[in-house]
Length: 208
Image (tube, rainbow, N blue to C red; front, side, top):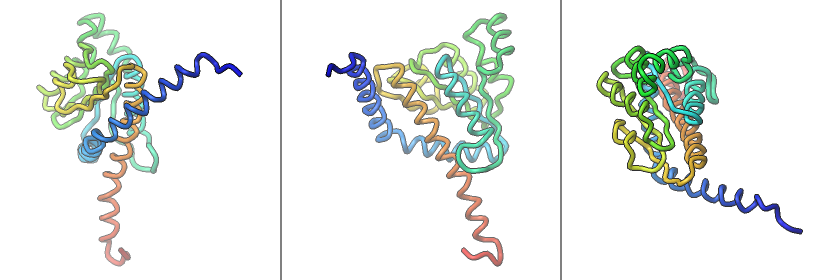
């Protein structure tokens, strides 16, 4: 029986994804854990996450904010998180009046506050509108994190911290970014739950 001609392509894709995930998990997990803890500290203190990307990366940025406003696994309170590309009237008005390179930077100026976090996702790390947003955010006192494709790249350099996925395929980078988003949510939820568990254990009359 002759194999389907697409099967080799599918296997190659899976091998590339496995290699990218292996490399990311070896080097990126400590930073993701740090980001989860840092984001928990910011959001539980009344801060905000702003997130943005272009194309498929926009969808993943919105996936992240949805998990924070809604929930990831466990029931918990809602946290403030905005996907800037989802503000369609703002995006189109700013793009029309100021140019597409400014669609995120201007929203960062409007919504960002010192101490907030800006998460930027880009498979290339070269999107001018994301780089402008990173520069604007750092000038305004926000913390800027970036998930990108292979480094070095301009967005990674413009951010405070970056995780760069070493993969040659845009699809593989995006798939690894989705895993990173879920890992960030895992670490965020664990960091939020930890002080709650400690507080519960110290309530008078409660067995620890």
